[in-house]
Length: 431
Image 1 (spheres, rainbow, N blue to C red):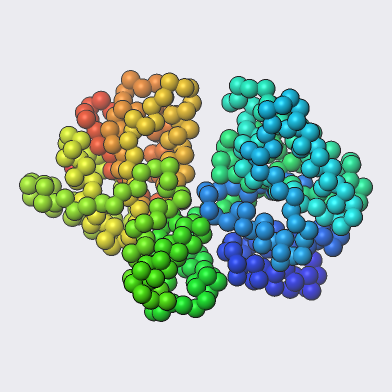
Image 2: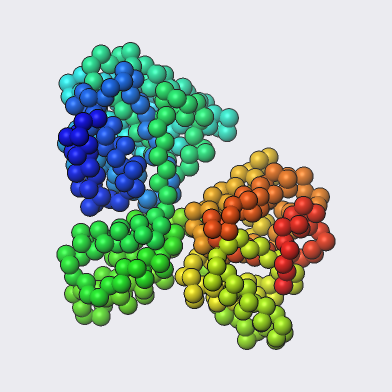
């Protein structure tokens, strides 16, 4: 890559990051790929045909595609929205797919590059092993055939297919092998520094400078789990609050107040609670002191700390909420509450999948406090699935170093003796 081309890529990355924040190293790859294809500079004979954008809703997948097209002077992407292409008539859905790919091939011949953007790819091409109807397997087969045929049928230029999904695990595995969607890009919820940059972009682009004395560091620290879309909603709530108070500008107080009305997208599948200080409902002074010590230890140095709550459910909830309240006052981290009974299902493999999904969320949102109610409902010694799911969750959390795992895991249990022996070994502390 020439120095001139490198400079062009860097300049475009800066422009794009003024409108949508994506990690620089990832964005450089995407920009470099599209510019080299557009100008006929790509050195290999077989450039990537498919890119997969995946991550929680609101992390900028669709917005990035639109911004790329505008900033790189690309032709407008040919948009496919999964649910819109589905037809009740036999063969109609496949026909629509073929028409779109034919249009893309014509555009590639004329302009050297055509982009097909498939939003909600999982609704169009779910795993064939998990579907019962006839339509989904036919659509998956048609999409695979069309993507495989691109190389032979486009004599000049390139067609790049971009798929976007919130649920990559639901896609048919055949789509993710090399030669199809072989360039995968994960859109994680932004960390504190990234949230600060996104907030700065939003304040400049959406408020026309109508704000005063905003401490971006404080807001970024208190919005763990927020995506770009969540931060935009936070800003709109703040603007409305300012209007109601007769101001034409927002202040720090507006953003902090609005934060209570916006639920982070990355946490919507689990119940996020605002913890309460319930120490006045706990008469045992020893337990109060223990709660304070746990909160102080975790706040000073967040690490993986599993604690078993062995009282009845009502009392355990008071303990968990109070620990979370004292900890969140210092760390401003999310408090996730999960009922173990939510994971119970008669369908084979579904419980394991749900628990692994919980771990993925925990891993993205740490530091955090997670309270699992009645863990013995799925981790009892008689549960045949225990070695697959709960132990994997605990292993993953426990095997990271203290610097990488920052999770306070609180689990209530009706009867400690009912827990699987291997699970019990992880809970060296109890209240």
